Length: 330
Ligand code: PMV
Image (tube, rainbow, N blue to C red):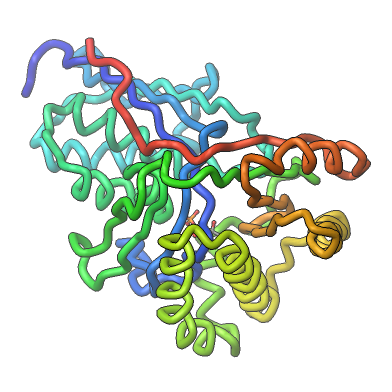
């Protein structure tokens, strides 16, 4: 396709939270992970991206939340557009307009939703007709966990050994089970060490080998708990998994310590609330904020409790959502 201007395609992609984490890569450049991971897509944290390839442009023009990005900031996006151009045998530059509905620095990683939306909108705008698996592979090349934001609902990412074997697929659709994820924001500060660097450091933790040995079993167990809709069984695995990943982070050289006293306080509270009958479980990514999994019937009670916590700046309530969708193509 080398027309004057191609279609302007807009896609919407959710962020996702990993129940079993991706931490450490087998192939740095291709972003092939060491292990499978399992996640759910989040309804209230998403990216909307429009892509149009245009003859009038002599370089890619990228805006994020209505601000133009400079060359350095846009490098990773331009590299991803190059992947799409190569697949489509296209040389036109693109205009990319991206909006995150969640505030920058709210502790929600925007790379998963960002690269999922860019992949779907970009591929279609370039005239490619990729299936879900191919889109998941493409999104993974931009940011590993982005591959899990493509399929609907409850998702597993098969690690694979080659690029085309490393993709995510849906285990259950978004309506399967009314589990919610409340993101309790305790800090909006930018993290000092991003996940790309963290994945590399993981491999030098003395605990990394034993983490990997236990993972297949953990994945089988969590999939059984999800199949049985056994919330407590699933929650126990989720908490143990978050602690396991953070133990690796804390014992990498140099160490990565993402928790703050506020993170730890909230983890303790969740354990205490559980003892008094409120069934909720925490998980934490590469940052200080706490994701709280609960059933929809308990959201109100949890929100009341979280409002009383002076360290919680904001709570984002998520249901489980579909994956990435095309909104328009004009
Ligand atoms: O996709 P990345 O490189 O941003 O890594 C994601 C890392 C974690 O969020 C900590 C875990 C995960 O599986 O999402």
